[in-house]
Image (cartoon, rainbow over all chains, first blue to last red; front, side, top):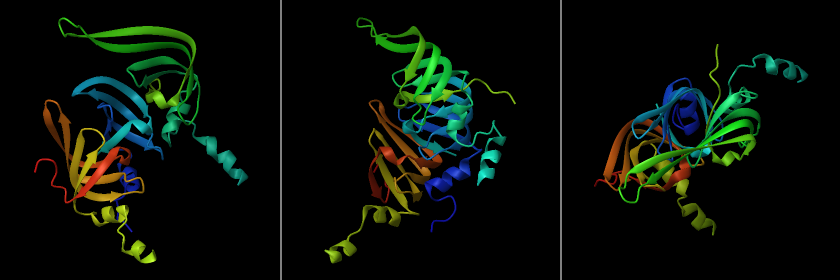
Amino acid sequence: MQSQERSPTEFLNNVIGRPVLVKLNSGVDYRGILSCLDGYMNIALEQTEEWVNGQLKNKYGDAFIRGNNGIKSIL
Amino acid sequence: MTEETHTAPVEPAAVEEPLDLVRLSLDERIYVKLRGDRELRGKLHAYDGHLNMVLSEVEETITVVEINEETYEEVIRTQKKTSEMLFVRGDGVILVSPPVRTG
Amino acid sequence: MAMSATNQLLPLELIDKCIGSKIWVIMKSEREFTGTLLGFDDYVNMVLEDVTEYENTPEGRKTTKLDKILLNGNNITMLIPGGEGPEN
């Protein structure tokens, strides 16, 4: 019914392999390449950077982010 | 159908779902970020779909921001604890980072 | 009974009518979004385009422009069709 890249699931399938910004409820942001995700919105990122109020705090090669903490991700 | 069981584990390094990242870190030292400004570094022995985990040789870092009552200065204090073996309840987990993978 | 049921506009039907138009989303926290609604699912996770994010802090309101986002439905409290946002 809905055309391409409209529904959340389709959106997510389209952003796999692309750089994303994941914002958590706590205000912490993660930037990285989206490797994959699952139905709980658990997220796997590559080349991950952790940003807290505009400052780079950490870098991780790979990172697993537990789904219940996430707010949103951006292209 | 029985063929499936033979074809499934062919690519052990493939990350098809986020939990694969955790699976590939079994018996490795990982970094775990928890709610309440707590961090853990330890060897991953077991986990489940809730991200409940068993870690060994764990170093826990707790970060506390205290405000000096007279100067109102923020003092960031870190406290370290070590445990031989630890169970982590999954609901507190924010992030899990495996050791750097090569190749 | 059956009549009132058919005349009723279900909440998700209202959101469905908003697809393609501007919408204003208010979160549980001091955060709001306006943007064009591209789609949503049963959890009311939403895909929004040309988004403005408003973060209300004691120091004032911080706005951020975002291209396209997926918004987790978990933390949404209210959706307002039209989407003029908190600044009007």
